[in-house]
Image (cartoon, rainbow, N blue to C red):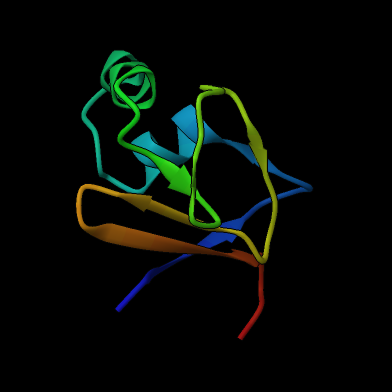
Length: 74
């Protein structure tokens, strides 16, 4: 089951998302995970640490999936 994460505003950066969702302990750990090719966005490896992610996208990392939804969405 995917973690539903509400995006406040237009987007959230990938490194911030990994930290806010509790999948890493620090921004440095998020950067390392991206550098190591461990993070996928919409099923494709993502190499941009600060990629702008928007509602409707899905992030996979460490056997967890995060589904981005707009703030206030049911």
